[in-house]
Length: 249
Image 1 (tube, rainbow, N blue to C red):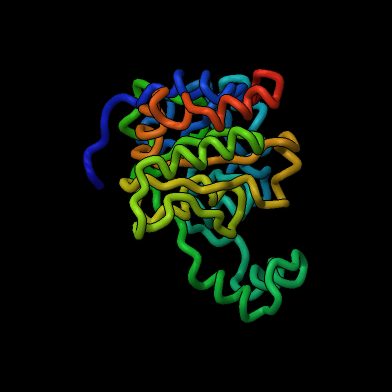
Image 2: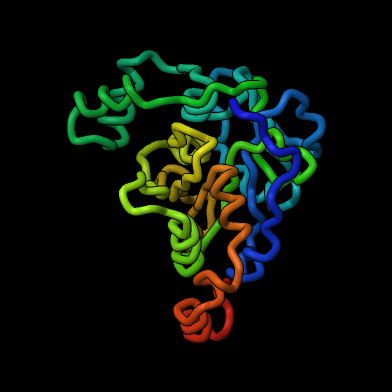
């Protein structure tokens, strides 16, 4: 993995431009979790604990969720972040296909289970919580919590440097809500984004009007560098802001 900058880009200007009211959340892969205190963690066990997004309100209070291969909460998180299977393959496929109805056939569900990627932590500790600028070298992704208007602007920002013919920088992949925080990015060094918070199993832990917009660090830097010469300072966004009574948040 390429060397990472020691400091995070500063999102203050973008936050103000889009009236983002909910603090951004970072996904960190670090060797010393104590640096991210105050910490909260699920109990170690077989993977029947709470969903990652059960800690949404704790993030807003300044806490960071600490996950490891032995303490990760729900089984979906264990699989997504650490490759830990808490169910036998056949049982897991039947749960997703038959009990949850997530594919039209068992064969389709099995195809997803057999091929969907997982994240492999470099340091063994996954930390999810408020941005820690001094620990930027461990940052892997950043998540914005956005309403439809803010999501539209972030989508424009992701395409600001996009060249025709290049892969689309924004996708909406299928997967558990936690997986959408990092797993879909095949190359964390590329400017990419995922529209997340689309897993109905975790939607109840989020406000009804918010979705997640998760970006790699390179795209985060591009978004933070947007100025008034971009669409942020032009007519479309100004008219949208006026239509919303002067505020997007």
